[in-house]
Image (cartoon, rainbow over all chains, first blue to last red; front, side, top):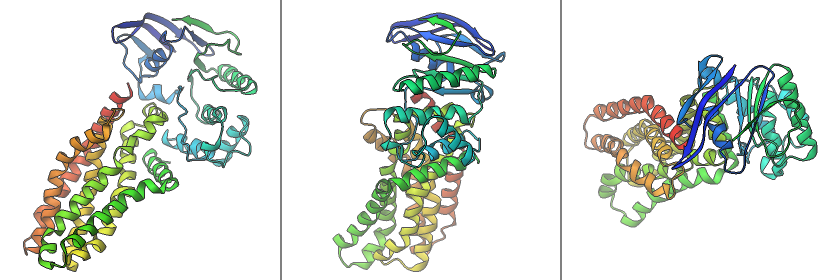
Length: 199
Length: 221
């Protein structure tokens, strides 16, 4: 479904990586590994179409990505909090899905926040939450929009033991339902199987 | 919900949580336009003559005040990135943001202008033309400003650059907007001025979201 061939990226004079090839089918996931500055985040941004590649090709369901269809199937969570500090978790979640053209009723939004352990925090402004809790608000998005490909850049950062386990379960569930995932992380991931790509 | 309306709702909600940012521009408009009659003194003929220019220049600068924040906050916290990756077209979301900027920054100026115009001894019909011209002109200012805001996104000292970039592009709106009121006071027909303003608005409404989107994609790379 996702096929990447000959991908290359450089920053200024420095070549970060070249000839990156991999493919993912249903239920498979890829663990992108590498030292700090090896280009993990750059690869993720290339993959989702935020920045252009120097060379190479990304194909999604046989068609060149990024396309609208690709974006519909994609959820990308990067380093940024990507939540509005002045809004509550509930408002954040509902407005973010509304921007994607999906209407989310209050009950499913609350259910997603409960699952992420934010019970009792849904109506507080995000600015008073801790870094880990902000991260959980963002992760709730994974449950509210049906997407096939999850691209998660350092998603396990700032999460406590319980949340790491929970995110592992969410990813395993997603893969079980025929989803795909590309993850970066320095720690071993609590998700069975998976291909590895070392930059 | 329609993505465009969702963006408008989001930005208006955010602005209501941080009222000071919106109120700054409005207060600026009120204070600047009030300083001139106070400084010049009770000279109705002179005040009436300079009123359209002053009200329009103040509206221009008040709009400019809010522009650097149009995309900066979303860029900083990564929500702009999420918008660029959304299945909804980025142009639509950008149009929503521009519309919200006008509702928060432009519309209050339009509504306040007739009241502030009284200080310059403008009569009711001149105030009507002024309001109408601002109603056509302020969305144009938001649309052109959005292009500048997107181009200067992430640039250090972007605020000054933004003013240098955008103010020259505001000149046509200023000339025809202020010109409409001046023509009316001189007893001339204002149809031409207003039609030109409307034409510029239509043109900008069509091209500005597109140009802004292109600039944002470059800024996100």
